[in-house]
Image 1 (cartoon, rainbow, N blue to C red):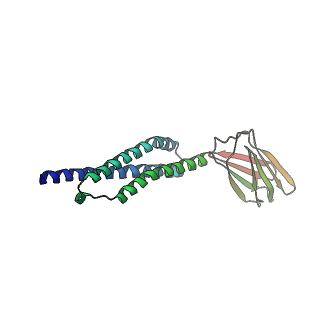
Image 2 (image 1 turned 90 degrees about the vertical axis):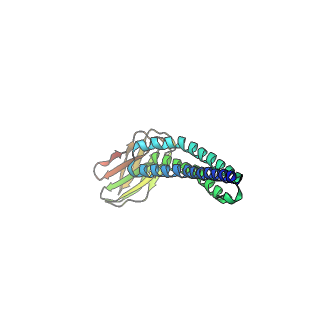
Image 3 (image 1 turned 30 degrees about the vertical axis):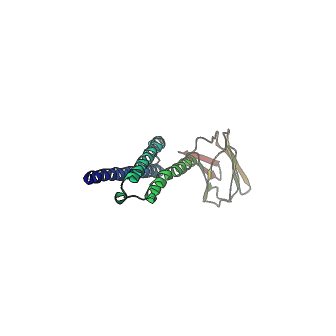
Length: 213
């Protein structure tokens, strides 16, 4: 009887240990992989990483559910085991549960940050007119973006998130007493960002626009 009792306790203890380990891995794995994909995407900008991130958004909650199931099993086996063989307290279970739950706000934050980045336009105005540019304004897509005066041979940049689709993004400024106006983009949209638009203001030709993805 005593030997049987010890074997039963040891078996329950082993199941409990492995259940807690599985739950811990299920909490740490999506966090680590998700953060790594996001950071690598920020550095390299590879499109396939966005696909990988989307797949993780689907698989991650499933992994977390497996972790909660393992945690519940481990907690139940721990409760069923003799007191002298229990290894994990309720605090351990709470910490593992917190790690599993932490995946959701982190994933939400990464999604929000990624959407903000891919929908962002960066406007760079380069002043090569030989004079200070005053009253620099870009207007379109539901936004009016104003720049501080830009000295000669200097540049300034702004990040812009357009609120809706529009036909044009227009530019206007004053180079001394000479107005500089024109169309930077013929069409802007709030769903296709991730671009850098460089506006080179020239003293004789008005301005040139170079677009980069």
